[in-house]
Amino acid sequence: MKNKEILNALKDISFNEKGESFVEQKFITPLLECLGYENHKDYDVYRHGDKAINFKLNYPPVETGAKKVKHYNPDFVPTIRKKVFWIIEAKSPISISFPFNYEYIVQGLQYCIHPEIQSKYLILSNGIDTSIYDAQSALYLNENMYEPILSFNQRDIINKWSDIYDLLGVENMRLKIEIYLQKYYEKLCLSSLDANYPSKLSKTLTQNETKLSNDIKVHVNKLRAENIDSGRQEQNNDFKNKSLLELEDILKISNLQRHVFYYYYIDLLLAEYNEDKIINYLIADYERMSYFEKEHCFASLSTYYNTTSNQVLKEEMIIFFREHRDEKISLINKCEALSLRIVRKSYVLRLYPKKRKEIIKYLETAPELERFVNKPNILSQTYSDELLTHYDLFQSILKKSEGELIRDIKLYENFEKCIDESYKKAENELNDYERELGGGFAYYGVGDKIWSLPNILKSYNIQI
Image (cartoon, rainbow, N blue to C red; front, side):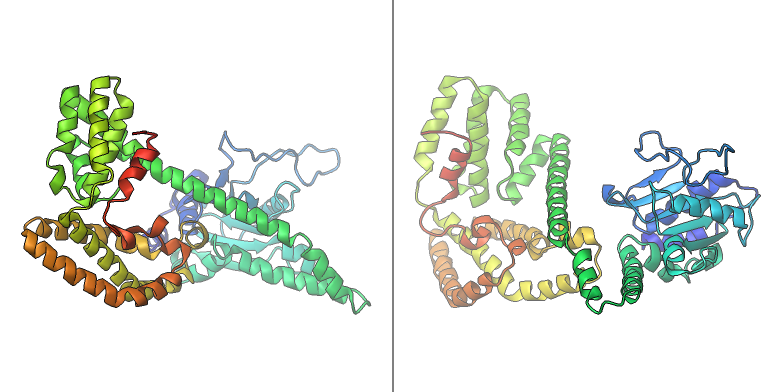
């Protein structure tokens, strides 16, 4: 949708009395965005005016005798993982009209064949008209390098967008180059009289296959880690901007957060209450807390324990931990945990197969960053619904009598037994990215204790 709006705007730009800078800012830059560049650091664009870039041409590729030639850089150098496949030369529509003169084409093609660039395509544009030239096919396959392989007027940009994106888009760039490499492979093969040469050449071309594959895996893992770190930092910044009430709203509806969350939370409590009041504030009405809230209570107290130097308060918290760490799960929490398990198992049985098909279909045409780095998963799509369902169910559970809770627990247990065999089969078919560590909600409340509470204490290095 966004690309469509940008392309519509590009189609209607007026270049009347506009110079090269206008073409660069108002036409080339939005065009690059639509093609997928600069949306991620793996798709950087170097500009001739950038001061911080590594990219500088040390010398022109062609000298004319002893005559000095000015040292220029291309206007735009889009990259994919720091690899250059094409360059852009922007021109002023005031002084340079279409069809483009030979001298401007030569200037751009010299950049393409420069040892520090070696790009396949040259894009020459004055905003009104744009032409794309294939420098390498001309060099190696005897095609005419001065004839564009695609030209378009700004008025035709929407109609020709499919061809433009197929050629230059970050996800499609390799496809045309693969065809070119195949043709060049065939040319090399047919230059030999040795019938075994095609096989020898194939082995030569692929001898670094394992290393290259491993290098790609390392880079993908690095991107995944960076993505996780970025998400955590964004969440941390979000925590910092929330009030005490807003953080407590998160506690009511979600399961356990990271340690950093509780440090923000304790800091806000210390700003609001006297130190000796915080423990009572955190454990108030503990018996009627949800499963999640009890986890939050333990994590908050553990954070406070590691934060305060008051030994009296520390001893008070230790007494609380000892009393509740291994206590039998209450009827309220048992009923709640059963409902959590049933919702998760029902989702895996009914919703996951449908969602998995939708995701597989989407990934067929999804960008590489989503297919290999930020791969969507079913859990991320259902998790919020599960939390909201849990919150609503727990509010209704709080209103039930002991007899009603015992009745509901029996009903839930019978229903769980009915679906467990099917669930275990479905669970074995889950992909790694569809699982939660330790089984997640499907195993909440199994047994007669809240098993996560001792683990919380352990994670905060609290010995009792």
